[in-house]
Length: 214
Image 1 (cartoon, rainbow, N blue to C red):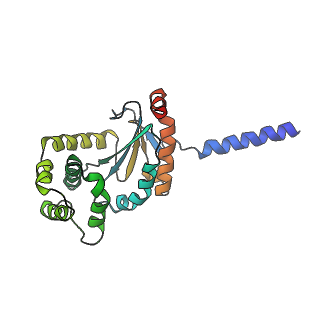
Image 2 (image 1 turned 120 degrees about the horizontal axis):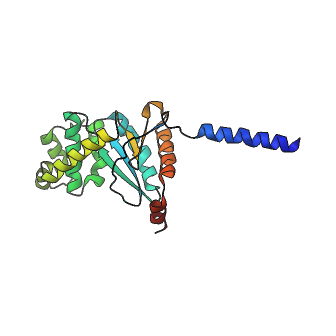
Image 3 (image 1 turned 90 degrees about the vertical axis):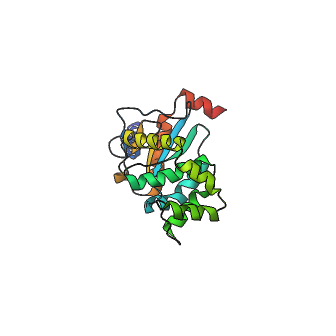
């Protein structure tokens, strides 16, 4: 009788764990066409965002500490979503700042400027340039990068990734070229990252494990 009770309890626990795991088609989408990644041997995680998105702005203080704790076999990068011309202007600013090496330093500050205080319009190049000058940025370098061939190429790539990952809104998380979290069924930003963590584990292979040991 005791053995039967223990066996029954184990079955119930197993069923509970199975239900707790995220499900394909519910919490995440498994892409039919795997997207190429830029991080061989590692699990690549992409945050699709837009500077003008208030939800992306609120997500920043949640995702930032999470990124800092990622294991060595995980490579995180941001990709500006490309839905229309308004999104493209924010993406152009992002890649121009990245090209001159100040994006990481100014990412949060730019978000703050857009959503609080001065309500900076990132699509307004003159206003953006004036703001950047106040942040100690070489505006001539920024202007050159803003319409550079390199930035144009990255904009095209961002558009391809937005389409390839079937992104419909931001913020969105994609994992290793294969998985996209279905944000309609996500309860909170913390839940979004929990699903991302699950997909990171699911994505791990020999290459990622080997990289983690280095």
